Amino acid sequence: MTPAAIKRDWGASAALGLGIVLFFAMDQRYTLGGPAVTRAEGVVLVAIFALSVAATAFGSTKQTRAILIVGGLFFAVSTAIALLRITGMAIYEPAKIDAVRLLKTALFIWICNVVAFSVIYDLLGEGQFQFSKRAGDENVPANFADYLFVSFTTATAFSPTDTPPLTTRARMLMMAESSVSLLTIVVAAARALNML
Image (cartoon, rainbow, N blue to C red; front, side, top):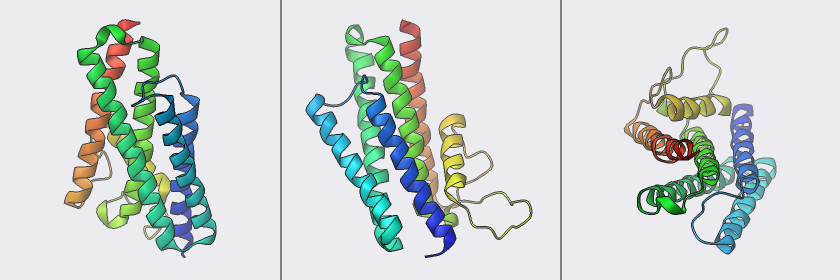
């Protein structure tokens, strides 16, 4: 395993760890199902994170990638489900919405969206994106922080900014991330701020 690959794997594991911290820190948010479903999701997330750390420390790159793919997809699906839930509530059950809880949920969704897609972009690899030239050494491979930046700017600016996608797969993923972010801001955050 190359040093660059180790860095990317640790970065992705750390991002999943951050997502788990947010999952438990923002317990007063809208979720799909009751407390039992939320606890089950938390157990799955902790298990994926523990496996990713163990695989990064002791396993092969292939094992680590497989676990991180599962983790990234789980976060992406959980984020999408939470977004669909609050969008439905905002449209069909506006009287039942608590503004502070909705704002917490919107923040959780937005951050988890950035985390999930940074892990996914990292696993796709450099061939999917055209990174700006680095000062000093143009041959330095991209690390997880580069993919985190791509994910953050895509979720914030709804565009690739200085790192354009090179493949259709990367374009579709960036479009999906921008859509989740846009819906979160327009539907959830705006509705919550309007209620406060």
